[in-house]
Length: 97
Figure 1 (cartoon, rainbow, N blue to C red):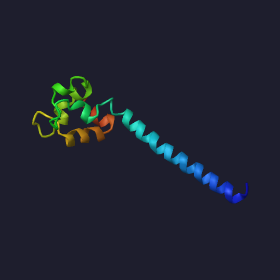
Figure 2: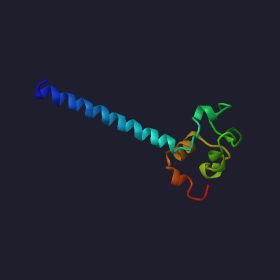
Figure 3: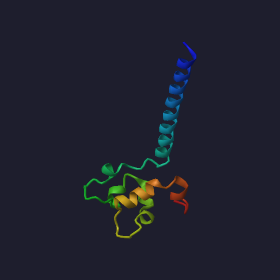
Figure 4: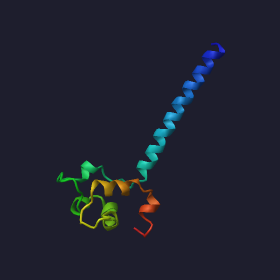
């Protein structure tokens, strides 16, 4: 193998490793989400909101419900849920929950 082919092979391996690292970071973020449900799994009545009853199987969300429900309408919108999901674990649990 000549030097040019070696260089191309090394660049290709580097690109694959970088792509793998990006996916590993995504997996770590997902792990920090405390096994929160996918929206479609939790929204069992398909009304576009999550109620406290729908969150019984997801105790972390249930105990943080009042904090997550920022407009205090008694249900979680997809936007409220998404904001909570985007927070890191420490920010979500900073008040002892």
